[in-house]
Length: 292
Image 1 (spheres, rainbow, N blue to C red):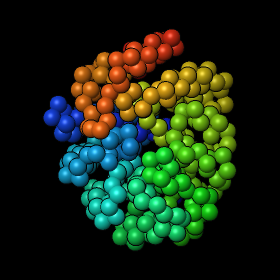
Image 2 (image 1 turned 60 degrees about the vertical axis):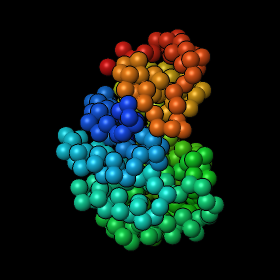
Image 3 (image 1 turned 30 degrees about the horizontal axis):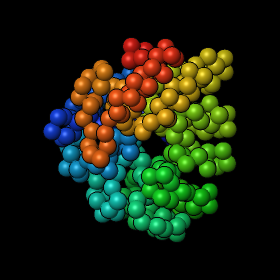
């Protein structure tokens, strides 16, 4: 079975002024990221405001995404707490021949490894053709995957549990499993992760660092001298000062004002923070013009 590897952006969702999902622009945004160097894109991850977007809008986007020229390069997030809604959305995606998913355990409730295994088991029993990258981000869902939980899931579902996006960073240095993809959630971990045997990254800021991230990845792969990693890490460090979704939308809104639209309770950066973001990026000679 082919592994998920490379540079993946957790893509942004583009909203109209009435806060409905602009499906055409959301898809064009994701396609542009692939043109800029991403091997693929995760749709409806946390960066894509997935938890705030209606199921009907997600289904409408999936229908149109199935016509994308890069159809085989997408990971589909669900962004749903409900088990039944997660399964139903995945069934829609599978009917459109999307079978690679990025799925985080439900938020809010407290639970452990046993309950997480039950959650994924019920999904896979309902959709055995799916391939799942589990999403490890304790800050968002309150649960942090253990190595033993990952190992148990793979043992139980070797064809369906194919990787982990590690945004809690407790796995990527120590998890070594054959034919299993480990992808940290930050450019700061890209080079180190590759050196440790990871397969790449899935990150929010690849919405603006796609080409630089791809260069770091390719230079490592082809054993070339690293010339872009410091800039990549510095850019990520600037964005890490702020809420990533707010920072990205504030930054991109200088290119197109439609990026100013965010679903409450999310918001743009305040004036002072936007100024600091812009100035700090300018010091790195990084701007919208450098995105290509």
